[in-house]
Length: 140
Image (cartoon, rainbow, N blue to C red; front, side, top):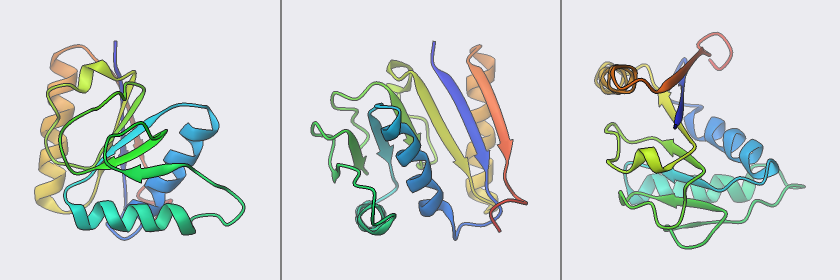
C-alpha cells in the first residue's frame, strides 16, 4: 500500500530547493521520482534548480514523464513511474496508488493549505499510512 508523507513548510520560498533535497535523497537510494508540478513554468524552474543544486552531484532528470530517473511534469500522467511521487499540485492524481510513496508539501498559503488538508483527510479515510513532518521552524 502507498505510504504518504506530508511536509509542512514555513514559507513558499524554499519549496523547490526542498524538493531538490528530496529528489537527491531518492535518487541516491536508486528510486525513480515523478515530481508533479502546477505548471510548465514551475517545471522549468525545478529543472534549472536541479542543474544548479549541487555542482558535484549529477541527477539525471528531465521535463516530461519519459524514462528519466527523475521526471518533472505538469501533466497528470504517471508514465512508467511507480516509486516516488512528489505532488506539488493541489489535487491528488487518480493514479497515486500505483506509487510506493507519495510526498505532499504543505505551503502556508491558506488556499494551498486547505487543499492539502483535504488530501490528508482523503488518504486517512482510506487507510493509507501517513507521516507528517512540521518543518516550519527548520526552513524559514
